[in-house]
Image (cartoon, rainbow, N blue to C red):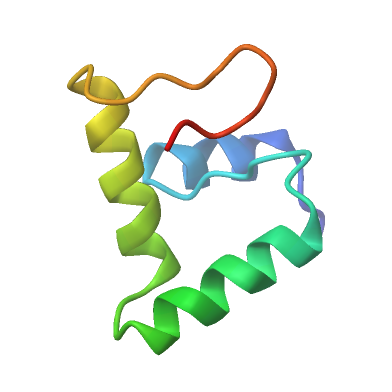
Amino acid sequence: MKVGTGVLARMATTGIYLVRGVPRELQRAARVRAVSEGTTLRSVLLKALAEYAAGNWTPQPDGKLAG
């Protein structure tokens, strides 16, 4: 079975996204925290995207997190 770019485009339209450049350790730590708080990494990411879209949070240019 050959997997081409058409498969990725079809998957992306269903809501499956690949995010490049996320360090594996960051992903693991976030998932561990989410599970320890009784949630999922998906829920955490959706909440973060909603906050950003609503203008309630803006990333700092230097990459540091605002408190």
